Image 1 (cartoon, rainbow, N blue to C red):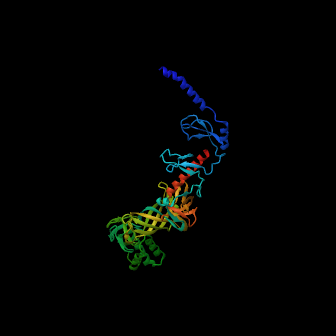
Image 2 (cartoon, rainbow, N blue to C red):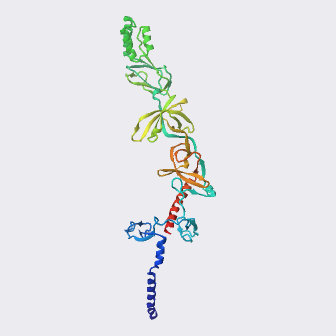
Length: 455
């Protein structure tokens, strides 16, 4: 214990000597020499969060500690050394040192590199230069910029309906009783002029007797006779029936109703012996040889669809078989709930392939442009509001370039409005790796340039 106590003054003396030696100022010549080589400026940074750098003193916005002053090279006053050798890790390019050594992350030897001069593409992003072997391993494929055709289709779901202009409704303008029915089944096919039913109407019988009496008294051309005939015509009594009454001079007790068009009976609302009232629908007959398809398209597709545009339709139970038609009508108003626009298409229906009520997939040719500058759609990359492609400007050198894209077609082609010229070569596969390399090179250049300024 005594020996240790005796040594204490010696240790205290040595500590004081070391502290005093560390506090000595460097020679004035050295300080002057340093200022001759580089201009500095004072910034304030957080000891715990060195990424916080401010131009004025204050507190760290993360931990609240007071910012400490730090002298750094003034980039505005000190130009970056041209051709200065720095050292970086080939696996971790963010590791940059001004002296050789090993990577603190993976332990690999640092390789020397020159402080890079910015190498940029046409839009300010770094161009990428890669070895042909690496290019092959990356799967980089090239294609020329050429003129061609771009077209686009709108795909939607439609419902088959009876064409309204191919539909007829049979009703009476007078009352009566059904005496006989020839067409008594829904779905039955009828031809134009075919007998549907026979009816007895006291009103029609009285009107016929008035016509016969007027014709016998004043003749068929007299005003009274013509008025009696006109009354029957307004009741939609066929002209041949009226002529038969005048020819025989006798009123016909029963009136035959015939089909006004050929088609299928879609509605039958009458039975034999029943009394029918004026205005009551008895039959509905539709021609299904031509049908309509009603579909909805989204608001952003609506401006590109026009009447007369060609369309194709595919049924779910007949996949692979398509029918051709056209856009027949575009409804004038938009559905404010679904934000869709109703359109109507017309298709021929041979063999009754399409039946009312069916659903079908419809493809409408919305746009088509010919003789425009096109590139494969997969070549165009999107980055926020920008669209760009990689242009092969020299062997192994790829330059990112902004483009203005037009119509994006269904044929995997995209129209280029501006940014490219016909005959240039672009990248269509592997451009994501090129983009990553371009961004990495850009970040490395900025980091190495900053290190070169500071060293």
